[in-house]
Image (cartoon, rainbow, N blue to C red; front, side):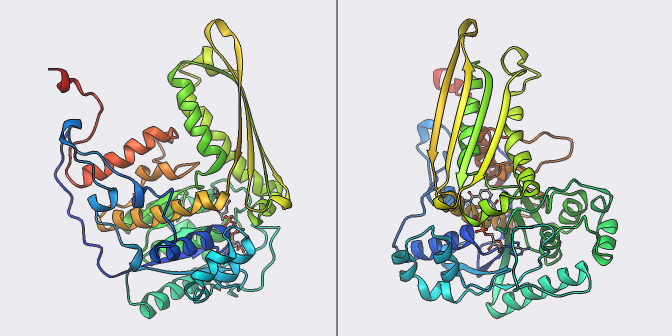
Length: 438
Ligand SMILES: NC(=O)c1ccc[n+]([C@@H]2O[C@H](COP(=O)([O-])OP(=O)(O)OC[C@H]3O[C@@H](n4cnc5c(N)ncnc54)[C@H](O)[C@@H]3O)[C@@H](O)[C@H]2O)c1
């Protein structure tokens, strides 16, 4: 199937990246981009920088790099800004988070020291384990949204930016369910003016981004833009949005392994996942209400991949548990264990054990980069509203209300690459391949 190529505006000029939350993930991302720009390291883990895309038939040998196939902003053109409840610049934030070595941070120190967070739109009732003084004061949540838009405008003007993207990398907020105030743009704006407690800071940032005309991605599991009022506003204003919750360590493994088990019709009795981590994110998730937001996000993937209704003999009775334990000695170097009880031919039981000694922010940083570049591309292509083709990056992918989310990493990747082929008017790849044998 070949579609007509879409008109894509060129990636000329500077691209601003504004980030609520300048902690471990943000500092690892920004320092990483600066290090790559200087040739000190490679952008490992980034599909936009290292990935290729096959075009046409396997015999044609046309396999460009993704960044040479679609017009993405160059790393040289990225300009960073953001908000935090602590006033540390990105060099200090990088040192404190303890992810990257000081020797690396020192080599890009001037660029990092120049990035000082703006005061945050923060309310402790949504992130109870943190206290910060670098916060905005306002009479209403609407006024906070206006202040955030002012920050963005000043940043855009000062840096002569052509375009801007926002990625939420701030702490996970307490669990909230969508309620009446989230349903329409009118009820949401009334809620902002009347300080409705169901409107969390992450929603105020998402609203500010959409109103400022800039795409928004949510790297945490809290609802943020995933409410009808904001998905509608994004659609009406032609703004691409996506989320939620970067798919990194244990859930990444889960969405790699479980499609494989299902592909071979191997049954599942149980999947027990536990983690220890000691960074600030772990401390925030030590609050049961913040953990509940994360737990919901982590639990949903298996059910959607395994489809128990279609395969009752294999997947209708499994137990799935997820635990996160805050354990300071490990810092950002998380350890995640999975015990997977499976069964095969005639029901004979077997076990798989996974012990993933991962580095949370090292896995998350390239996702931030890809999301920035792909969201900017989406906007230049005129794509708006929920960008389901970016599900590849998320534990709880946003999708249209009548759909279930697609969690299988390999289907997600195929969807992403076919979207790029579609944008460029290239043949979509179905892997049918019968023509090779005619
Ligand atoms: N690292 C990963 O692998 C990964 C995976 C999935 C999701 N996430 C999510 O990404 C987010 C960032 O993770 P991290 O490890 O960098 O955490 P972190 O605690 O190091 O950084 C988060 C920062 O957000 C700030 N913050 C909190 N509320 C804010 C607000 N309202 N406005 C502005 N700043 C605010 C905090 O002060 C902190 O500096 C977390 O929500 C985490 O759950 C991370």
